[in-house]
Amino acid sequence: MHNEKLDLNLLAVFDSLMRERSVTRAGEQLGLSQSAMSHAVNRLRSFFDDPLFVKTGQGMQPTPKSESLAPTILALMATIRGQVLSQAQFDPASAMRVFTLCMTDMGELVFLPPLIKRLRELAPHCTLRTRQVPLPQVEPLLASGEVDLALGSLRAAPQGLFQQQLFMHRFVTLVSVKNKEVGDEMTLEQFQRMPHIVVTLAGRSSEAYDSALEEQGVKRNIFLSTPHFLVVPLLLDQHPDLIATVPQELGNVFGGYGVVKVLEPPLPLPSFALRQHWHPRFHQDPAIIWLRELVKETFDGYPWDGARAWR
Image 1 (cartoon, helix red, strand yellow):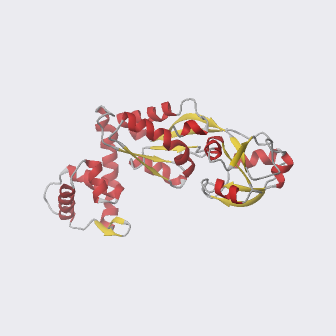
Image 2 (cartoon, one colour; image 1 turned 45 degrees about the vertical axis):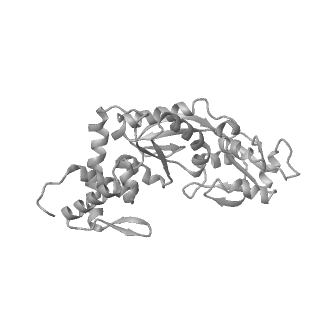
Image 3 (cartoon, one colour; image 1 turned 90 degrees about the horizontal axis):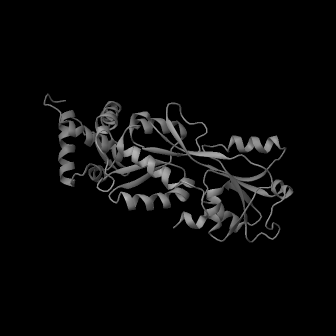
């Protein structure tokens, strides 16, 4: 490490590179040209006397030196964004920022279309990125600023996060339109006998959902467990004897495909709150305040029918 003074702007370059793993994307986030970013990276390498980031097939990967520096630098930059810059105003009409949301594939399918529509109307120079991560990683990513908001039914949400309820979601049962046995209503006998597709998140199904079935003495005939919602309508279409129970907002979207019928389950099932979560570091950040308000307003009165979700 050289004795020259470190330009604090270079820490922003390091922070962005560590999160983006791409010189081009990091430059876009910082508003720097390719040549300016390359010059900044070379200055960082010279100061720390280390390559810091090495180009690989998976992008710019940090060296051991970078990984040892990252916790301190990322925490410092998060503090600057969350506390120092929180005094600044956020103008969505002119802001250039990448907002990062943590959500499941279901969240991407159901919530992104209306959210993207509102964002492009109100903040035309901002962009979105989504990430799917295991639950234990949610809090650290929110704390570091790598993720701005986490949206979902986090029934075991990490402690210390702020949260706001967006709406309650309930369950519906899906059956192929090709199925000749089930009409407009499903019987409890059919529900128990027919083979189920079950979507499990984080390697397990909904404990509250299973508990509700157990309390009513109902057992499902589980044929397939999968971590992905998006495969459900395809499988139901190709195997009409299967059924699946999914959140209503997702069922509305799948029903619009024309390959499945959306039915009321033949027994009472619990509803769950969908919330947005954020870290106290960024509670007063004007950009994150604006984003939270945008999400809340976008889903006011949700769930809608499947058609409105795509308009």
